[in-house]
Amino acid sequence: MKKPWAGRFRERTAKTVETFTSSIPFDRRLWKYDIEGSLAHVKMLKKQNIITSKDTDSIIRALEKIKRNIQKGKFQFRDDLEDIHMNIEYALVKEIGRTGGKLHTARSRNDQVAVDLRLFLRNEIEEIQKLIKLLQTVLVKLAEKNIDIIMPGYTHLQKAQPVLLSHHVLAYFEMFERDRERLKDCLERVNVLPLGSGALAGTTLPINRKYTARLLKFSSISNNSIDAVSDRDFVIEFLSAASLFMVHLSRFSEELVLWSSAEFGFIELPDAYSTGSSIMPQKKNPDVPELIRGKAGRVFGHLMALLVILKGLPLAYNRDLQEDKVPLFDTVDTVKACTAVLTEVMPKIKFNKKVMLKAALEGYSTATDLAEYLARKGVPFRESHNITGRIVKHCFEKKKSLMDLNLKEFKKFSKIIDKDVFDYLSVESSINKKKSYGGTAKRRVMNRIKQIKTGR
Ligand code: ARG
Image (cartoon, rainbow, N blue to C red):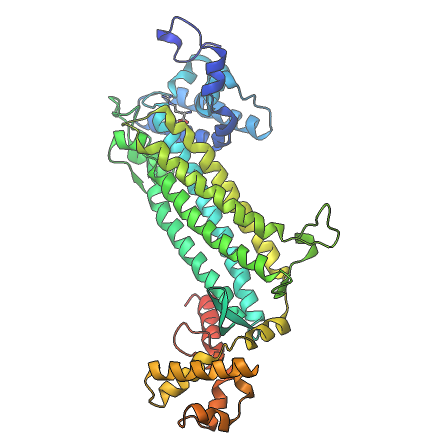
């Protein structure tokens, strides 16, 4: 096969080099965007009288035909044609002859691949935003339905203070809200048209970039042709937003793994979403959250790969940039798969309300409430903290809970303690008294749910 660029070459390309440099095995998935970009480009060329209406029409018709062939699986992607751009151009020339060669007027593969990637990512970000929104909806429903489940809140993975399960779950809602905001912000910089930058310097032909941008619904056009063909910041921004999102999915997954263990026993994962062991017949393993946790590492790796690929690159386009695709595509696929499976499994998880409550009752989790009770009566908090500490030590030695002490015993530690202290010691009252904004009081949590559902 004669290359489109074969003009200045004396030898044909070595087979090894063809295989080594080819990106078609992975960039073929850009075909839709490549054609979309070409259609807009050719319409612009016609509007600017750079090519005739007749040529434009036949190029458009042929591109539409190629599109249908690819959709039907009737298109043969060829390795010796390097990439998706040359594959489609070759098919075009095969279809309509010399006229097909006019499509590449005022264009280079360098600005072409950049536009394809931006169109692809713009679409995928919108898909991912929708998926995250679905996951959030599931979490809100779950929080609403289980508003009365009490669990221990943890610090240092030690029981700290009782909280509502809903409050804990909604913490993830807030993380995902920030993830969506970050993606929205990233989208602004993805949504810039690089086409019309040529190889790196622009073009002598009278193109109209604003028109192309309008056709492709880009909100702005790049200001510097050198930057436009060498910039992959938008990919890195996406990978970093995706990485942080994966951090959140991974932390959530870690909790599901812990909570489903016999040691915690807080939840039961549905059988249909668990797997067994090939040797230990009794086992039911939380492989789904484990894999989400593991896949987070893979996405962070992709972010690191792109940072390293870019860091030493001189301007403008270098073939190194072809290596952006596999990490980007794999991140998109991984993030979507993880979000979808978590959204599916969440409503099917069984929460063991009694076990969670029992765990919340252990570990003197209302000790802070007792200290705040004393502070409310005028005892400096540092003193009330100390008094409460001594009460806890006493209970610990006597194997009692705070609720087991009577008023006389409390008085031994502080005369200020009165019978209203018992209002502060149960986990229910502990939770309902956490009325500060953003706190775990049931009323607060219900308000937040209402806020979310009504869009504020
Ligand atoms: N396959 C290439 C890539 O993905 C397309 C651009 C190639 N440009 C070039 N001058 N070799 O980056």
